Length: 99
Image (cartoon, rainbow, N blue to C red; front, top):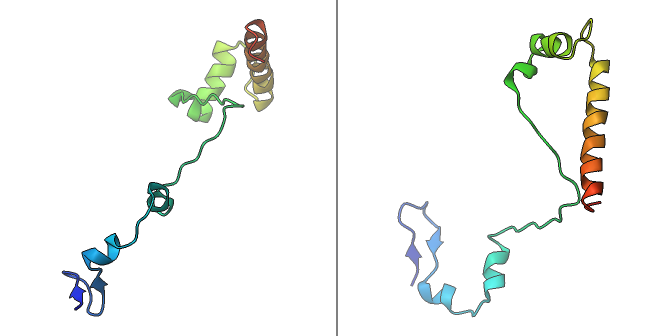
């Protein structure tokens, strides 16, 4: 005796309850096809900051000229800022024995 699933195309059938319950399965077997678990250790952290005004060229130019006191805006001016930030994070970690 075959049961057709409600609203399914002809020829497709829904398994009988006894069919799906007839095989003993472990939780691991059930989850294997339905759940993905990914574990990774924290060996690196990334700081992502979103500052809307710095998403446009005008905002970056204003930051580099008005805030940082440079004569003109250039991407070259970002490197010392990044290096200084990295150095401060490394110093912070080293002083606290986190390295």
